[in-house]
Amino acid sequence: MVNEEDLWVLEERFWTDGAESARAMTAKNAVFVFPYPVGILQGTDLWRDSIVAQRWRSVVLTERYFKQEKDIAILAYHVSAERDDEPIYEGLCTSTYLKDDEQWQRLTHQQTPVT
Image 1 (tube, rainbow, N blue to C red):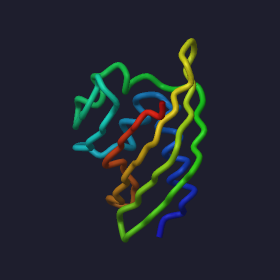
Image 2: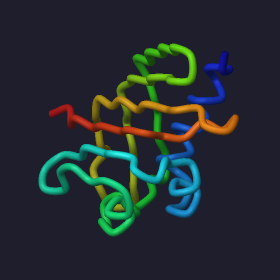
Image 3: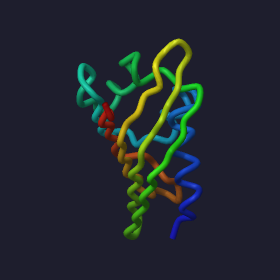
Image 4: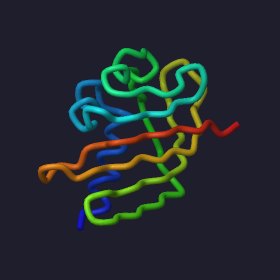
């Protein structure tokens, strides 16, 4: 079993650390679903989109849900994220992690804006 808090720390780091850190904790063929106009991205396309590569100054993850089955863990949550000179982004998110060679890698991520 994974320590649940460790995955929440990884999830927050994905939002706030640089693109290299996010890439290091993401599976090679990961699939991310972002709000329009970005859409569905997979593999190396994840790192080509400027929206994905931008980091957030601060994030707050609430309404947290965690579920683990063997080597797969799912996180679902509400995010409030802030960047310089932009309105606070509110969204509902899910991320799936896969444990591979004793390391947790993000396999999927999905965001739905809260309006």
